[in-house]
Image (cartoon, rainbow, N blue to C red; front, side):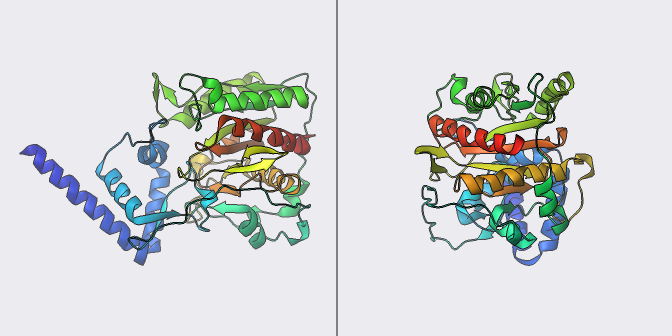
Length: 373
């Protein structure tokens, strides 16, 4: 009897949450913004992992609360969108925004992405704020950006060159989500997960371009042998802070991930005749959709981070068109405060093969060298 009573309460709560969300989504952007702000101010485990925690191999939810059930209901009746809807822009790190979709209406199947036939240097003179945002960025509804965040001449004039030679460590590569795998990942073989992809990037930067690179292969999302991302960014920060303290000469810090997308989406292009996973440069703004700065996530290196990823994006457009997706702007900081030249990179997704991922490291290493030399 007690069990049935609590089940009924859960059902009522689920219906109330759903009804409230529908009301806010249609009639009150202001209320929704306030709730988004509250969510963003809560610990990461309640905002990202609590809602999106998945088993890595079978992608099944591992948390089932009334809120989860209401989210599942909405997923069956709504389509997930971003400010500029684009099949390429689904990502594990985003906040979800739902828009009404008529029952029975089906989406077009996602197509493989191929490389444009031609390329040329980007016309810098045309890059005003509006053009920059529409052409090169995806901004989630969880954050807000301003024209003063993107002084393009100043960003492109920022000197990214290494300040010292390779006699001491220059680059740190690590993986907040080290258990991220791919379509053909072999269980128990870490070389077929994102860590293995990072190993190949390390080898390219060292052997082909002569950089002194430290690769941290720890999995910060594996706790007591189980996948747990609730504190992965906290654990990663602790881990890389020790490395940076011991190696103050490190100038570039790369958190290498793979994205999580719809199962029918294949993020692949062709570079130098090879099937190559597309990549995305990811920035945290430490700012809410209301424009309020998130004080406890203050990032004094935000402007430099943004300049670094913009320079990388424009080089990619010039030399490897179609290789990169739009740069992604989200509300948090994602440990990018640790260095001015820090970046989070999403390389492909779970639907890519390991070889496609490793192929992507070749143009990525070349782009890094172009910007850093």
